[in-house]
Image (tube, rainbow, N blue to C red; front, side):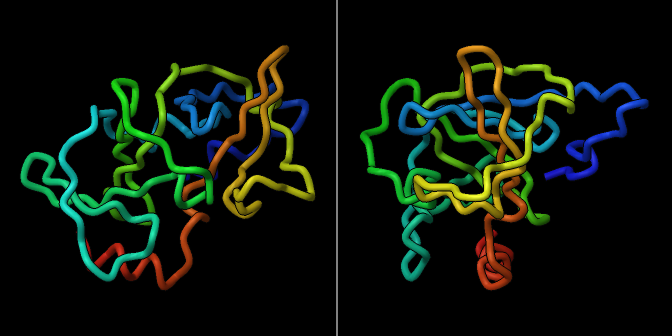
Amino acid sequence: MQTTALKLKSEEAGGELIQLVSFNLEKEEYGINVLMVREIIRMLNITRVPNTPHYVEGVINLRGKVIPIISLRKKFDLMEAEYDKRTRIMVMEVVGEMMGFIVDEVSEVIRISDKEIQPPPPVVSGGIEQECMAGVINQAERLLVLLDLEKMFTADERRFFSTVS
């Protein structure tokens, strides 16, 4: 993730507006910096690849480029669900590679001030490793977990993805 966009400015600087794409997984709302998202597409036929991590669904051909597809539900150890008409693949550049992330639904693009981002709580449950949480945004009735996908993968996983695509 573009960590420079997420760094909180000092109080006298006034705060920077950030745009996030919000999406849902298992009825929870997450956000990712809009600058990381290349496109959002409907589900396509995914070609399975043997000997891949459990959360890798396979690969797709997107305009001549082979892109690995990650199930965020599996990566976060959430229960699997059937794909439906709202299921989307968010194509993003992560760790220098194009990847697709399957999400239950893409909600909207929201604009927030970087001052609205609170640090992640010290104890996080629900299968999401704290390292990939960039922060939490609390807006009225809405709690949104801000993800840093760059921190989601180990060095070994990054090497694997560079060989797949």
